[in-house]
Image (cartoon, rainbow, N blue to C red; front, side, top):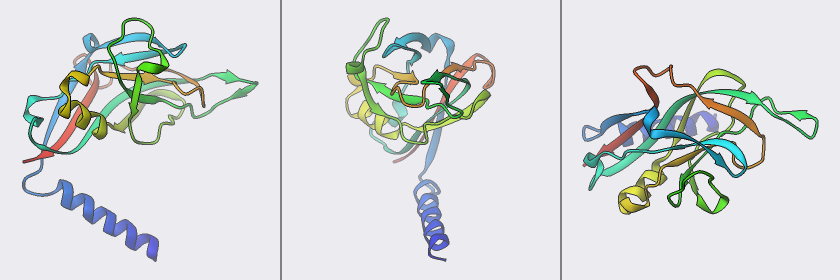
Length: 178
């Protein structure tokens, strides 16, 4: 009974935070021109340039989310195949060209990092803290790095570019208020 009461209280808090009359939402579609493949900590990965809308400057950010679709494959490590590989998403802490080293990997996105094997797997990650950092220091926005970065539960990921439509490879969703 306590578990359901806590869930109900949590749901009410979310509704109060996002369901107020002052809450607004803006979405930004990111295209293939904002995505590039990269070697990330000796693995195949991506660097995604993110755009933080000017409308968010001086506003209260309730939440920021990255939505994308990936095809995921297992990688055999030490004679074991991982059925749920880990897709890591982090802020880039500095501008990089080519290879992304460990020193350039910054704040992680929040959320469950594991992805079920298969095609067109929807991934939504909370990047609120990353965006708040970008809003407070715009010059720190070097984009996001995406891939199997930790060496834990390795997998191969390909960002599916045909699911969101019209050349969109990822979508940013921002919830904010005055």
